[in-house]
Image (cartoon, rainbow, N blue to C red; front, side):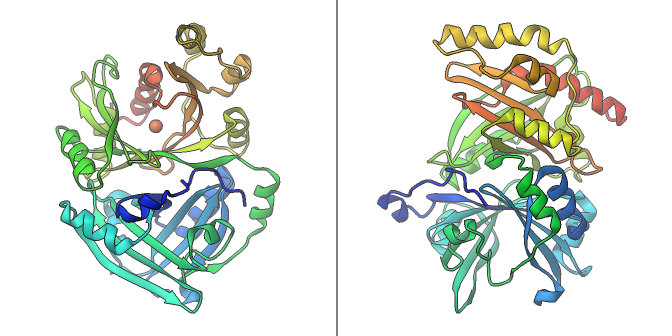
Length: 399
Ligand code: FE2
């Protein structure tokens, strides 16, 4: 298993700041059938099905699978009883992201600091340990149904060991499938979580921006308004929050006024009018390779009209030239053939592409992104993208 250079080498002062983040520990999904979802994500996105925690390992109320690729760790969990809290959430929201877990130096201290900063408690610190090491976790509530778990690890369960294939916690056991070997032979090249976007209710974006500033001590990263990102029919507003070391970026969207229904409003209506994670962006160093491989595996990406490519090179390369950067180096025809989107700003460019929803409800989707200097989110693509999204909303009868 390869590891991406995402984790920071923590400076000695970082350990004294309780909210200093080491890494995205994992992203936890609640799904209707974890055994089957594991095969979907392994087959279509090339994840390794690495570890399991279920009845055979003594877990009586839920089954969980750890999927990994590069420095991305996804845990898929399904309830085994009607009384597990995930059962109620699945009824309301369908499959989706429940928790964005953050590795810290001391989960208890991070939790105490967040709570003293005003966080609402999901659960108090709890340590799982055995003779090999320990994992301490404590969680706070963020927008809607989503939580942030702080996790600190010792011994065999320390993150560097987990990245090398060690067990995620005493609750997990290693597993294997023939698909894992196939995926090693045919890598998709996904390296780490670039950003996670939340959809919140109209009028609530600034509330959650302030929450990330005061509770997690994040900073505002970029700012768009509805003039930047609206089409004739649908609109949204978005602000991007980033952790102190930019390890994780969390854009927050709210619906804005439009002639027809905003895609954010559509999400909320299929998510029990409750905020949640709209998309997770996964970073690759080679967008063309990753998208070609994912397409070959059957990933369903959003389609853009051909007209997009008539204007894009002029727009993107002009901006790059104005700021003294080289033009887009990847083969332009291949980019068009693969349906990849391109955007540029003063720092460079990025390549990105969005999947269609990953489950039957029009809720969670993935973005595959590669950055060549640009640290933004593809603002120049929003108009073309929203038109493509509206086409899909129309097909679903939700516009
Ligand atoms: Fe994104």
